[in-house]
Image 1: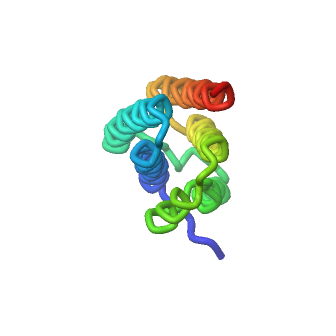
Image 2 (image 1 turned 120 degrees about the vertical axis):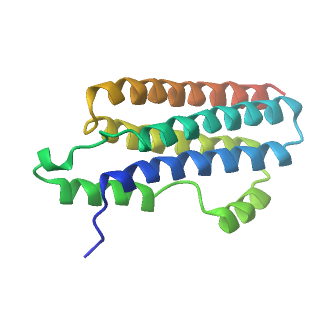
Length: 162
């Protein structure tokens, strides 16, 4: 049977998601030959870095998820774990190989958009279980992730028009 996770581990997962995004975007910026793509990936990396800071602050907040009020926490915790286990972005060694294989800039943007969608899904689920004061912060992060998708689509248009 899969391992259940605690509320603290859920916030740790959120941190990992943002760190993976930061690492991926920095790697993509480093390898980009197009200046506009490089700038776009660097901007996205910096925004992911801000999200890391936000989740570090949330992780240390006293009231995160009150799992005692959630009847089916075991099931929900397994769902959070499944969201992480099926992530789009690979871990460091796999990511480096993926980036080297991604010669197609449009394909890289599609992977980035999938990552952002996965992040939004995770945050939306997390937002259902946190206290109202934290919900506002997570809702802001969700909006920023949506803006990342719009930024990526803009980057894609730049490539297609070139």
